[in-house]
Amino acid sequence: MIRIGLVNIDTSHPLAFSKIMRSGNRARYAAVYNDGFRGDDELDAFIRGAGLERRAQSLDELAEISDVGFIQGCNWDLHLKHALPFINRKKPVFIDKPVVGNLADCETLQTLSDSGAVIFGGSSLRYCREISAFLSRPAGERGDIVHVYGTSGVDEFNYGIHIVEAICGLMGEGARSCAFCGRGAAGGKTAETYGISFGDGRSAAYTVFSGTYQPFNMIIMTTKLSERFEIDTAGIYEPLLENIFDYMDGGANRLAPVPAMTEPVKIMLAGKASREAHGAPVALSELGGFDVSFDGALFERGYAAANAERKIYLA
Image (cartoon, rainbow, N blue to C red; front, side, top):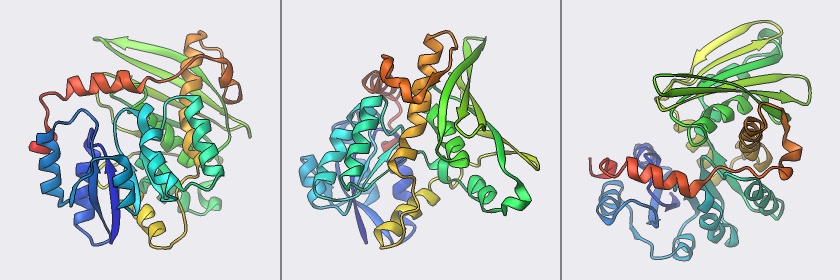
C-alpha cells in the first residue's frame, strides 16, 4: 500500500482523490499536515472520513512517514516550501495545479529536477481519456496536429491552467510565444483569448471565461481532419492517479517531466505579459525581462472567503 503524505485540504481534490483511492487497494492518504484555511472541524472530519492515521504536526514529520507527498494547497506560492521536505528525503512529490505561479519557481523546479528530485504535477486534464484516445490513434489516420483551440471558465489562472495543460498534452513541448488576442464582455463577465505559437510552426489558442463555469471544449485541426470534443470531467482524476501509482509500484514514469509541467505556466505568464503590452507577442525565453506573476496568496484569500460557508468536508 502506497502511503501518501497530504499537505492541505483547501480544494475539493483531496476529497475526490481519497474516494478514488478507497475504492481500490493501491494507495491511501496516511496522514495530513494542514496550514491552509480549512479549520480543525473540517480537518478532523476529513481524517475520520478518509481513514487517515493522524494529523502530522510538521512537514518534516509528514515526509518522514510517507512514501510520496501530495501538495494540494490552493496557494501555489507555497508549493515549493511544502514539497521540499519530501524532496530532501529523496521521496517523490506530486504538486497539484497550478504547480507554481512565477518564473523563478519554474526555474527552481527545474534545478531540483536536474539534481535528481522526482516531481509530478499539474492538471489531470493532460491525462484525460479524450486526449489519450486521440493520441493513441495512428498518425496516418488522424494526421499531424496543426492547430488546437480550447475553452475554460471560472478564473484566469487557477482554472485556466487546466485548458492550457490540455493543449500542451496534445501538442507536446515547444511553445515559443503567447499573445493576448482580445476580450469580450457582457453581463459583468469577461472572456479573454490568447494565441500560442510553437517553434515548429504549429499554433494553438485558448479562451478563459471568468466568473462562470464553462466546459472544457477542444477543437483539434490536423492535416487530415478537424475534431471537436468536450472533456468529460467525470472520472477525470483516475488516469493521473493510476500513472502516479504505477510509477510508485516500480513502473515507468509516464507523467510529464518538469519542463513540460512548467511550460503551461510560462505560456500563461507570457499571455499576461502580452496583455499588459497591449497584445504584443511575448516569447517564453524572454519572460525574465517582464515583472509578471500570478499571486497565490491573493488567490488563497479570495478562495477562502468564497468558501467560508461552503465546508465541503462537513457535507
